[in-house]
Image (cartoon, rainbow, N blue to C red; front, top):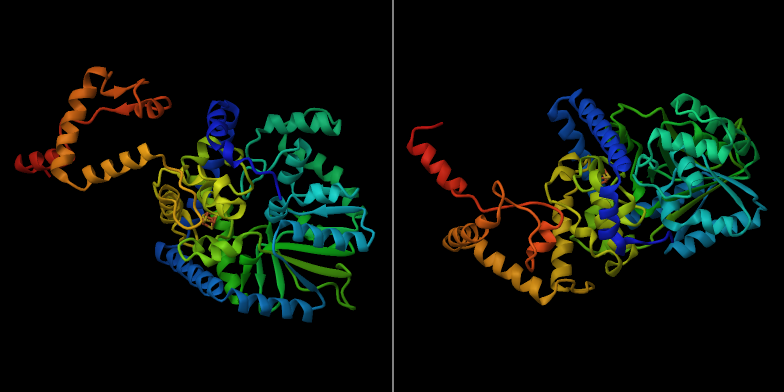
Length: 481
Ligand code: SF4
């Protein structure tokens, strides 16, 4: 499995916030993606958009509730089309399956199109350790492979890199003259990869969807590399998490409307590739063998937990990352594993172990922007709260993370917030105590227990002189509107 550094979330995010180049790259990409997403959604009426979201949600609810049935249907139909399905319980098994397919067929060179699951498995390192050359061919993945980094976004893996950083990387690693012209950089990558496509014995791809009724693997991309990976080499191996299955082609049509709009603001992506088995006798091209590796690797834990099951509805569009105030400041690498952002903060603890990732459910302001943006209406804030609750209370498989002091404070906070007279008194006392320490109504760094951790990174407003209720009441009594 890919290296897990989720325990480092707090120091890693503090370091990211200091990185001005990263902040610029995140801001540019985040507002760009979110802006085009909003424009694309505005092309249809709100009723139409919400109708699509509800349809998608219903399809996912139904499929995940009947996952065993649809996985069995998918397996039958892949086999009927001449392919083979392999089920992998964990990363070790998935890597062993792909390694064995490659070893038994004397594979020396592999080209890959984008696959977050292969990142999750750490597959490249496993294959390279066996002497196999592995080339990422998605431009973003190619960039991070050259930089020996990991993806920082679900859709745009090299989003954290500025144009100048990529130009410098190409000059250093490929020996080409420095140029930060995007077309020129794309041309350089194309030239570097062309021979690899011709040399490859095996192509590995991810899958955006797996259609059970036809046994079809669907890839949605903006680069032609996916098609070359799945059709030029003699063997094609598709990798997918088990939640990627959907029942039918009409269901696919719903997601084809939602995914490109939510991911990149496109009505449709440049390529929608549908692979059903290996080449047939009368096909002009295509692989001789098709293998589909369906990966669990912790997803069953999400499936078993009714409170977290809806995280399996995710179609990895990245929209929640682009609107998340935390992701937009710390970037993807701070999260310490493959799936960053709001949805990553739910999926990662389940897949790598809660003890490894206990800070992630707290990496959210619970503002709800992720839920509003999600094309499948996934209630991310509710699941984050559920995880926080389990961690604070130490329920079931969760190790308690709250100290006795934190627990006492939380109980005190809850008691005050649920009793208006106490809240009013607390505001008055808090204001009287804190106002002398404040500057323009704000407290800067305060070296007092409990307050120092908050004020070390942000200002703390002094409780106001009048509450919202008082202002409202006074305005009304003065005839305001
Ligand atoms: S949770 Fe929703 S918005 Fe976030 S990546 Fe998944 S589908 Fe997209």
